[in-house]
Structure formats: C-alpha cells, structure tokens
Length: 420
Image 1 (cartoon, rainbow, N blue to C red):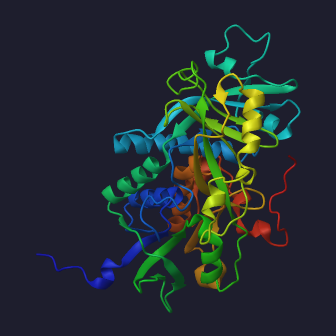
Image 2: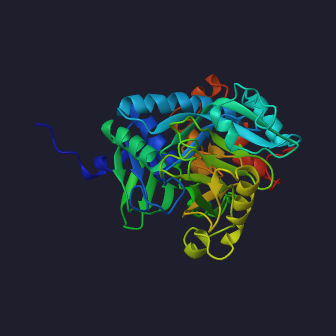
Image 3: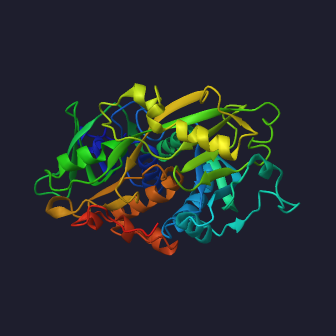
C-alpha cells in the first residue's frame, strides 16, 4: 500500500489559479488537460453572482473593430466545441450575428471588415430573400447593417460550471470561500506561495491571477505597490424587455433571430429570446465606476433613472424595434453585473514580472465587458505562458498578444491608441 501523501505534498501544485470565473475556470481546465497538478481558488462560493461570470447568456461574435480579436474569437469557438464534446452537453447555441449603426461610424465599418460580415438590407427595397427576422428592425436613414454567421448565445453560469467540472474530472482541485491575501516567492526556492485569510498556504510552481474586478487591489498588494493596473470595476445592468404579442416566435433563437450589436452612442447589444420566453435581452454596454467590495446594489439594479442604463435602451428600442418590443414600464427583469474595464478596453494578458515573480506569475484581467466569449482561448494562453513561458497556440492561431501587455500603460495612461 502506498504511503499517504504528506500535508505539504497535498498543498503543492504545478499551477495555482486564483479566481474561478470564466477565465480562471478555463485556465484550470487547460492546465489540467495537460496533466498539470492544478488548484483553482475562489474567495466566494462557486458560481456566485458577485462578479462578472454569472447569468443566463453572453454573446459570441467575430466582428470587432480591433484586428487582434477576431482570431481569438475563432480560436475560442474551436475550444468551446471541444469542451462541449468532452462534457457531453452544450452551453453555446449558434445564431447569426447582426451589426448595425450609422453608415459613417468608423468602428462599425472596421468591425464589419474584420469580421467578414456582408451587408444586409433591412429597410424598404430590401432583397426579397432577406431573412424573416429582418422585418423586426426599422433602420433609421443613413444606417447600414451587416450579417455574419459566427454568432451565438452562451449560457454563462452553465459554461463556467462546465469548465470547472471538466477540470475536476482531469484531476484539478477546486476550493471556494478562500480569499487570497498574499502571493510571494518562497525564499530561496522556485516556488510561489499563496496565502489565504484562513491562514492556509499553498505552494505552486506557477500562479495565474484571474480575479476580475478585484485585480487592481490584489496585484497592487502582492507587488508591494509596484504594479498598479488600471482596471476599473463598473456597474452594468442586464435588461430583459417584453416582446409584443404575436412576435414571440419571430424574436426567438428557434426562429434563427440573431445576436446583434448597434454601434454609436449608446452601444447596444442583444441576444435572441431564449432564456425567458416572451422576453428579449437588450442592454447598454458600460456603466458607472464602482468598488466591488462596496457595491450600491440599488443603483446596480437601476432604481430611479437607472443610472443612465435603461433610458437610452428604451429610446433605442422605440426608434429601431418599435413594432416588436414593448418599452412601457421599462424592462421586465433587471440583473446587475460588473465589468472590469481598462482605459482602452483591451485585455491584460501578461507576466506580472519584476525580480520576485518574473514569468512565474501571469495575470489575465480587464476583459471590459466583452471577454467572456474568448474565455477558452484566454485560459489556454495564460496556461501556456505560465508553463512554457510563451503562448504557442496564440501564435499559431494568429492571435497577437502585444496589445495586451501591462507595459502599454507605462507613461501612457490611456494604453492602446484608437482611431475610432
């Protein structure tokens, strides 16, 4: 009979992932699939609603103004399919995707070009072969619309649970309700030590930090104040609106209704009617700054004038989808969530660096309300960076990581410059 494992060996891992949202869960799965000994930690209960990875739905699309994102979305789509195959069930329902907005909007034009979308006429004189759902939109004068086939709706909480269960099936250890308060290099050793508020200590060869809205606080603390990542948490609000009688089928995922994005001010996004029959999710991107430990839940759910997160959506619906969606009385359901936003809304995927951590601690953060769809690719990239010192999969897939370096903020608080 083999001797029982010592306490120290039970607390030693090849990779310790801090934060069990979509990015951390995907990273744990990617590491475990390589045979690594993995520990995944979260400060709250698993699948909690206090961060950014919960809820009924997220969209997937490849139409991005920034050229670095479509290859990452396409890589992720392959990895989503592989994970679903291994799990034996689906968390992603494919749909078309529609982009629309002012014909002169630079970001829209760039997104259509980068995402290989094709123009779709929705108004008077439109092609007779246009999809049946096109009649749901009343496109204002001067607007354009473009359709792409890579769209879809992901069940968010179910997806996080899927990656966690796959990781555990491959040998990963998952622990919740353990808040990490310190990450240090064990003196004289090639070991990263992770300490929690409970006093427990875990040793790992590598560490991956994916704590979402808590990134700035944790990274600043563990780096002794040297690294202050400009990742700002924001309140946001998911709004579900009542579909007008007679249009319930037309706006459903079963009828092929698309995910869509409307460019301009405000930026509006939507998923087909799916999780709540007779309701459709149409919401506004962004929201006011917040402290993740001191959130004003009343503001987050949109009391009063909804913090500016409901009124603009209602006005957009009344202009573009007045025949199909009812705005009287406001949204039927309002669900708070958080973004973790960088000044340029690009991700942070990089080594923490410095003399203490070098390439042994990797940070994934600042996913700015649009990163969920890319979780499987981000998780695999973070693990390759941690275990191999480089992300081969990213390079092979044409994913350019330079835009995601921490160094872009050095002497340049706004990060990556944009022309739109």
